[in-house]
Image (tube, rainbow, N blue to C red; front, side):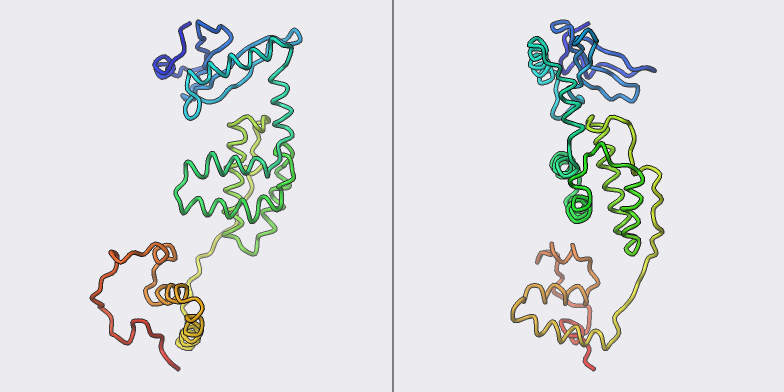
Length: 267
């Protein structure tokens, strides 16, 4: 036994089997060290004649040894009043809807760990596809059969179907990690993704001319959008590159004929 602090928890090395490192000031408080190196703060207590285990959280942001100890003291105080925190948490988790869990997923995972562009893709899948379909469902209730049906409803857009399935799979991996779904089953596992065929098509000369005329008309009301689309068509840049373009990125000396810059071919 030792007082759990940043030094002792960091020094705890994984072994072939998981083990508990107990705090010497609060005997019910410990950090569980898994063979993978994952470290989780827990407390043990008795309720109704049975030994119970309550998981506080994984070591790292936001749980430090000091914060976890304070939480252990708070939870044990509830135990002394006759409450069973583990049962109450289990009931809360079983009742959690996918809409509510999605907000936590976006706030605590997507906005913290992903790059800006990837955040947008994840939010799109969550807000446009996952929540409208499953928002009122409980996280604990979603099965593989429902996921297969959901994935199949987007077979006409295989790229989006596969990306949304990937986001949903990550959500349920975290639901298991965060203790919200405790059956250890990711309902997305084993769902076969669609084959994605890369398609490439270029506008014809006539289509370029029609696009140019439409942009000329739109330039009065939406000049920035018209210019951005014209740049996309003339340069072949990605959308994100044009959206974040700065003057420092522009080479003022054109390598192209003057007639090709800012003008579409006429019919």
